[in-house]
Amino acid sequence: MTEVETTKVLGLTESDIRVPTQDDKGHGERLWFKIPLPLYNQIGSILGQQKKFQIKSYPHFCRVAVYKLCQICLAQEYDLRSVLGQVDLIREILDAEAYQSAFRGLFDSLSKRISDYIQVGAPGEAARLVLECKKHIDNMPEGFWRRQYKKKLKDDFGQYVRQLGQASLTEFGDDDEGDE
Image (cartoon, rainbow, N blue to C red; front, side, top):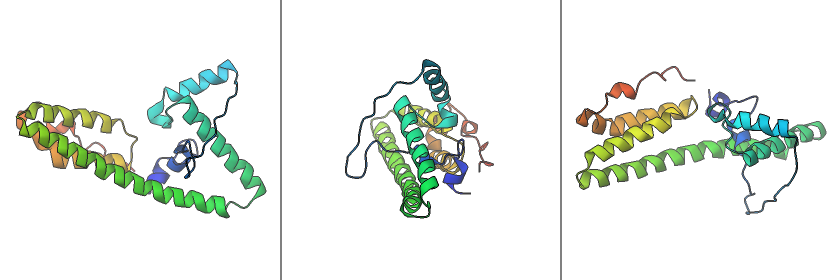
């Protein structure tokens, strides 16, 4: 199963949720509108469940809603196998490449920071940084990328925690082996 298939949230894929604020030329428009207070509160409730719904803010929620409604309206008028459908497929491919790039970049930066701590004689700070990163990785949505991040963190940096005896590697847990 692909990352896009495993991150479906209420019929939305990860590429549906990642709606940029600008087009590829840097153009974007600001929308101003009022909504009833109960609807606003419902959106706030959804935002409170960020791990489940992966939507971070009111503007983000509105962008996703507008994007999805446009897709629905266009599907009524046009065959989505046309340009819009193909663009969505390309976005999904590019999203996967962006995840891989972010993965490499994060671990390159983490490696540099840990090396800096070790060079200045602060292995405790290196272990603290590893444990802090692990905490954030544990908050990622279940799936392929979470498993990749956890494995890489444990394989590359688990020794700093183990050497200090401050935490056992069971904190890295293999409880995600069954993630889809």
